[in-house]
Length: 244
Image 1 (cartoon, rainbow, N blue to C red):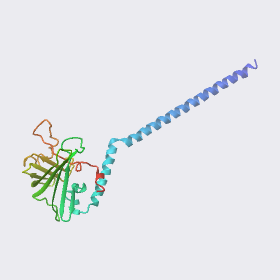
Image 2 (cartoon, rainbow, N blue to C red; image 1 turned 120 degrees about the horizontal axis):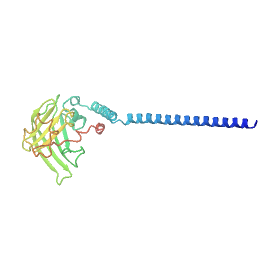
Image 3 (tube, one colour; image 1 turned 60 degrees about the vertical axis):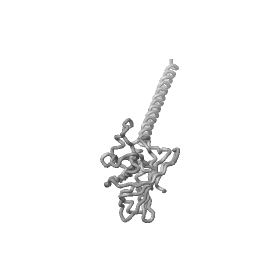
Image 4 (cartoon, rainbow, N blue to C red; image 1 turned 45 degrees about the vertical axis):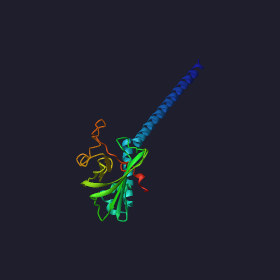
């Protein structure tokens, strides 16, 4: 009988010790799981902050705004830097040689699409004398060159007449060739700085409809028209112009 009691005590001790070890192991597992979940939540939170589309867009816009400002600082002609043609000057569509201004716009977006340049381009170029201030001439000689994936290149020389001018836009028209060129002082409203229309009358495009013409375009309406636009004047990736 005396031998049974120690044996019974040993069994109780072993049982209690095993239970204690199990509880400790269980607690450790809970702790590990809790830490793992906490780390996962924190990681997901940080990932969300990094991949938030709105944050990425803001960072992208901030970056390209700084590039734009840097390009503008590097431009030599102070008058053009602060003129109606500032955006054209930044994007290297406008250049200055001696006392003359030269403009060449590659209109390589010929309709409403995703914004990728077409395989052909309708280039419009002209020049005029540049004084101490920017004055758009009443008449300018222009050159139109269509080239790229077309059967035959086309060249055309004509005269533009100034038909409308405000602080926001300038409209030139060629009555002979039924062409209208619209220049904008800002690309904020239309997403670009220039429109080019073919086969249009002198009063077809004006200040009353030019700001809504792309929004009002209806492909099924034969009377609806859409302008040619330029990728160079549409893209907001200013890195394309920083080293030009």
